[in-house]
Image (cartoon, rainbow, N blue to C red; front, top):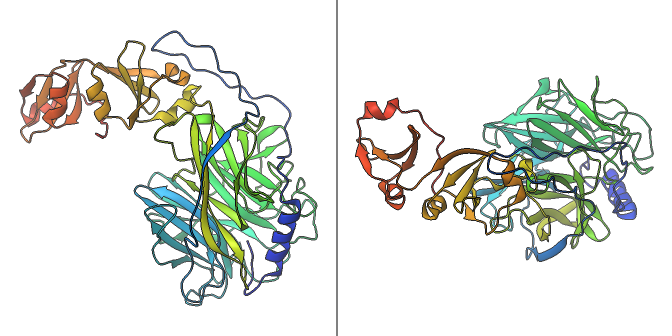
Length: 500
């Protein structure tokens, strides 16, 4: 995060250093110990043998793409635009990034917001949504947004600083929102972490440039700390904390050489860096059980992969080529996960970034879109990875179709009915699906009932599964019986599925 107004000496130093070391493509700090990756028992057939752990698999790269020019920018007198956070949220692509507008006091870095229908744009006119507090650690500058959504609440992790020309004064804060636009500072308006002070280097940036992922009830927070023990001599290094509390006020664990361990302070010595980089972003690829860290190198944006426990690199790095200035923003889901490929969810992942491309008079600007598809994941091999197939139909062992719903499957005798409730039908059954629980079966000819307003449901072992219109019952060769609203309300309900 460049923390100044106008041209920033610190930003220039960070940019130069990151271009020189470009953060080497090698990730650092391999821990001691081996992770245990288990295959859950199955209820659909005999459990298959556990898939061998992925280890430095070489991925193919296809479908390289980039926008024809700038995608997002601040309006008016915005002198720079960089460090975007990019989210697929329903039918919108939403972006937040670091800039500065004179209309948003106090004078300093502001976080702007815009949205569009696709990552390549067009996007709406940018508006400021978060600025310096006028007091506390973030009095003057707020920058480097990273967003996740937990339930109905958005959390934005940001870098704050009280003034220009600070010495290791950058720290990380968090704010919450119900709409991603109107924000309230959390954690009492105080920083949730700051520089550890393990090693005071010439680079006096401090702590910041954070990126958050929400995974199985934990918020994983990756960040720069130029004072961290395991940082490069130029300050480059990425550290990881995790907590089930989005404000990191309790239950915090730090990733060290022995894996994740509880810490009593969020600024405890930083003993392990996962990649030698500044201003990185990351996401979780559920189908491959892997983190993907995007960081800038001489070749472009390099993607370094780690397994869940940070004990192994499941894939060799891949690169999104093209010009860059400052860090990339990955296109992610509201949880910070990779978007599931609709055609090949287990074998392919789209990796799209927005990143600054030009060093303007006051800092990086001209944010553009670049992307690739990485292929050959060999994913969905475990039950946890098979959750990426949520909503997909796969062949069942009984020559019917199974639709994956969360951590279980629904078995349909009629393909035409399964297709109505699936995102797509895969030609083969991924290994991980065999470990998912069989929730219930939808046999052809199952009795159907209709309430007075025309809503229709199938009765499966006496429980009501609402399917909507009579059309689904007809496809399933189900005879419909009219029932009263009172009778309808008496049935035990099965989970609803969204018709496609």
